[in-house]
Length: 255
Image 1 (cartoon, rainbow, N blue to C red):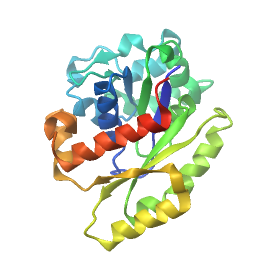
Image 2 (cartoon, rainbow, N blue to C red):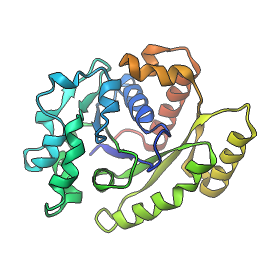
Image 3 (cartoon, rainbow, N blue to C red):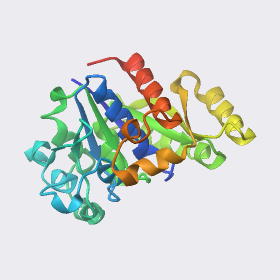
């Protein structure tokens, strides 16, 4: 069975999608079989991988509505070498549609059950809230990867996320935080350094050594539909995500 990670944090703009995309693509470049799941109605992961939403026949929306059919029917192969279950704006209305379903928090887990053994890593990109889609991501995952923008408000959001993880353990007892990624680090400011120290003091080895820098190219690459490893391969952002991916492999290995 492959590793299943949920990239989650209820605060927006902390680097969830960027981390999911670039770690996933780098794992693929290292030889892993990787499936990414875009569970955000904004579909930024799908767009960042160059997928044309207008050309999609199926998406994660249909997967959640029909979990007994598995997920392979909605999976596409991207130019970056990773498989993807894409999202579309249609997902925005699905939360109300799914509200009355029995076991609605387990829909994604059921849908992925038939493909778990086909991948080394499955990484699920959650929306910036703790609603039904994020609960589905956590219920399906083994571990949560938490990107924390190294600013004070993102750090203060951690207790609420931890409380949600504790609740989801009632459905998924093995769920735990698998790693914390410090993002948008600006070494020129005392604030970034101070928040990094606070996170490391509180969470210790859970926090990855690698810090993802505040970097213009990282912000530009999704608009180009490319991972940072091809958009700016020698830049600070690409080098940081390559290092982070090596840490992930060192920490979790292959299946």
